Length: 388
Image: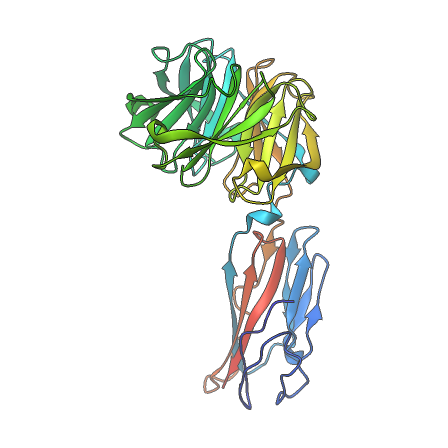
């Protein structure tokens, strides 16, 4: 139950904390109430505290006993919380896909721009990064080739891992031929046609000689690689964020061999408390929990996994959308990017304005403030005010 921040009744100003049980002076007792179902109703006449709880379907909220002589309104605040998403437990194939075979027949790595309106593929048949445009962000069914590409062959002829910094002005390639991370500068963020080699690199050969995937933490001060030689994720520290020339091995690692002996992809959730590995030995994505975000030495298997074998028998690239409600995989059996739906938030519909004054001289205003910390899955009313 969320805290009630304030309550202003027709009879005066009242303030409470906790669940509102100490609130008095109302025409009717303040009674916190939980409502559920696809069409829940909040009884305004009872001044009920509203707690929707977990949505199980698209939900439309209505309001009953709205004051006749009042202008009744609400405000709705949304706050993202990654803890409710990035979860393989309810993953399913979204029946959306896009073939990249016209550009690359051995796609090994996958990435998106922050908005999801640009998608990138790196592969070893052309040693090139190819760029695609999505007319709807993070919807691969709307993808088309942007006719933009950049060759990394001068650095490595087998690009296996791929990542960008936050604004897309730096790009990183992990080369399987040299077991080295190479850094590139983009004069226009997330536009590979403006890329150039930054003459910065870092070898990870001392940790793994069959490297396959690359990832960074949010500010670029930690870098991670996974390889199939040791089936292990290794962690590196960058003294300057997103500058691989300042990297050093952090002496932290985590073996994923108990789940897959051919790890090919690596990704994290927003705060680094969940890690994901896709392996081609089992054609499955595995989920891990990190008790300290972006510290692989604190990782443990979360006993959650999802098979992508029905789409591709050799998954090599893995990515998520920004809020963790969609997952994407590219494989070399079909040279196709596939889209999956995770435990996404259901749609919540609230009335825009409920009730209009029957007499213009009446100035009552009722405002409810809702908040969601998990993109709409759980919705609470945190403030209610009725001012006369």
